[in-house]
Image 1 (tube, one colour):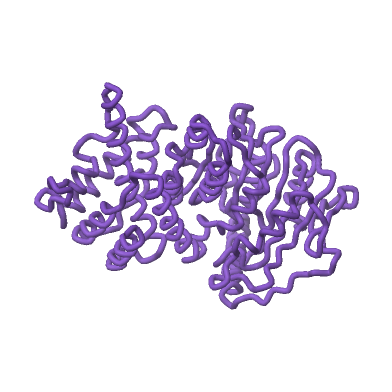
Image 2 (spheres, rainbow, N blue to C red):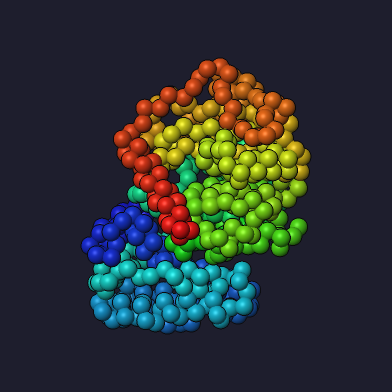
Length: 484
């Protein structure tokens, strides 16, 4: 039922001129799904309060509740189309009444961690792109078919929603910013092994894949108490997201997975002053795939001891700073970080090796990230002790990865198992810190077994990488012209 409802929603969105990509489909489905969920949540809280003899004050005023404007019901539970607005009246209400009211919560709510404030953040920048009121009515009717009543229903919905996010990620470079392959995330989570009672942080949430997979991993641990589950749902997962679309999707994705109170804020992580981070702000676990590329302004770069136009380098400094002593991290980064000779790369590698125990590096093959030509590695480190020995694993699934042959859990099973003891194999080896050049801190360890990866790349992947390099070259030329 759920899968067919989502398919019907996409079919209707394809009729809209303002919705031309999977990103648009995910965005428009997400805000409607969020309001539908919010209505169900408020109904549950009102029922709980009544059972306890208390009064519940809804977050939304009556005219803006889903059951009033979107889906007023007949006695038999069907939508009352005599009261449900449609056509131009519906679009006018959504654009000029509903969205302004919802976005106003950021001004009306003093608590930035509250659900009301998050509602204001979501609707402060996201826009309704469904211009036909008749299409909007049709989509609303399909969304209203979805139910959040049981954990089974939530789980099924979350799986379908994850598939939608995956399609969005495969749609192009912009969509790929929000999607990290779930098999890679699950492998990283298993290596880091987060425990109930620890806090997990992602400063570049995207679609909150790391949080959702970490929750599933921790929720499956045997012997959890009611208090443990409550801790997981409300006091475990924290993060930030800069972009409004990703923020909305992250919140919705976490809610569908069972994290009822996502502690995600809508802000630019890199704008936070590193000097202002105190012990109370730090976290036990960091799992993240920060965005690559030079996108930040000069004044943001000045916030960091090691300045760089590469946002991933800035994020890595932020992660080291916000990680608690003894804390553990798994961070995806471009493989060029291991060997680049520019001052920022060398300084950052030195800082990482001196302040953290960089114990493992996973070398991912081309095609791991569909739609992106860049190669990546995953850095696993613990804060508080300097690096003594680094264990490398060269991932080789034995086939070319791409959209038709994506990464799967079996591809990473050997890595996860060998990482427990950091044993040597045909694909893994160790390098002592004393064998690393102290001047360059070059970390591009070569497999001594001679298993150099041979990649027969898809033409599409090559074109994607050319586009990335062209964009970087254009930015460099633009900066040079500014200096002339």
